Length: 192
Length: 153
Image (cartoon, rainbow over all chains, first blue to last red; front, side):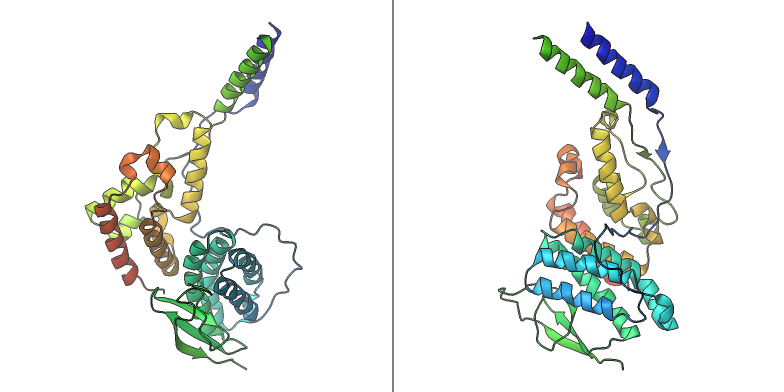
């Protein structure tokens, strides 16, 4: 008897407290991917006029993939997102601002995929390919304070950017037969 | 015996309780001036694939089976749809930048080629959503053609 009363009490409370009207959602959603910036316990990155932070963290992701270190790539991608979001666009040239505006959502989206797939290096590499295109386009317009090299992986038709002339393929990684397979396509000299 | 009855009753009560909380349904317009099909005018064979294998999670218009009203199934579905649309929404594809369109076309190619999409948990229930070899080849060919013709700017 008591249990039945208890159940009925819970049930009637539930009915009175819960909104059971069915809602339909037909809002137009924003086309930009929302950044996944969960708290990172990092010191606040000061707004910067140049994109060297983006380049540095991109290279960090690249080197992690070369080492087949998926979780390191994920961590580096989180840092990348943080730095990319703290770029002070107003300090770039007009051209630079336009390009940054074009790529920033994309940088975020691909870095997010890399950061949330610390156990799936294949998926990280797929998004790294797109990230590389975005970073290349940005560096081409804004410039870099170090010399960079654009390398090409013919098997995957994928580009990547490197800080050294040596070919270390992030799409295959150390230990693979293709670890040093790739071609230097372009040198991006540093802009003083 | 009495203890068992109490537990059973409480479980039943909880089951009824969770039925009261229904997630909003994704039933907006499937095709609009900014939808994928408007933009690319795919052939019927491709449209069919999109409709049976993709749109339920990747558009503004999901076809709901009766059991969506039984929780927690409805919540799980809502979560899939929310994540699916965030990643890719065919109903609003034309609102994406050229850069994003190209990236998404390439992502579709990768995911379908590797059988990551459509999700196994989806095709388990929706058998007709699973792509056979012929459909897969057709879809990938079309996507590849599309991706090649979309520039970045």
